[in-house]
Length: 230
Image 1 (tube, rainbow, N blue to C red):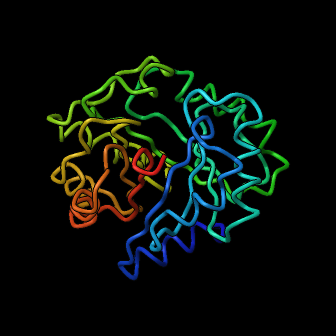
Image 2: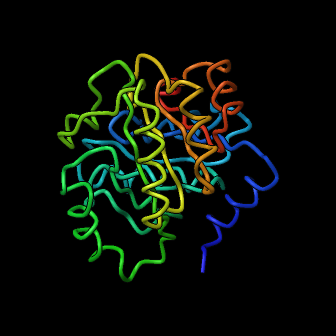
């Protein structure tokens, strides 16, 4: 049975509503400025993601706690490590790094997370995560010791997304990485969207309204913006 947040996601996709998420890195977030930060984000924001590749223990939970005290927007965990998981969030993107071949991020981290998750009320959403070259050496690449897929390899990206769906992912997340020089090309988004029948999230390097609308037009169901608001 699907959880309430995933079902809400599916309903929005069915209505062709476009979702906007602001990604908050606890390392770069000032707790005392939570209220003013939330006033600055776009009015059309539908979700908040909290996570980063190198967050210290406790930072994620403090950030989630501060956000939930000031907003009714759903707060999803987007963890870089199993130690970042906190039960006070609404949902967890249970990530599998499909673009890499490091077993630690294909199954190792997932197994380590189970002791934290097996008795939690967090809604757990299986997510196929695909890192795509955004023109820089991202924190995700450094931490996971994996290389992003080149944007020219559209067929490989599409096949990777489909493999994720066939393995049971409920979401596909195409990511150019934090601080990307350029976002994922619309033709990649379009080809992936045509191939899969689960919701598509696109993030990384999207810093303007034009880039955001281009991602939507190409087929992204949810756009994630982060650096632009930090």
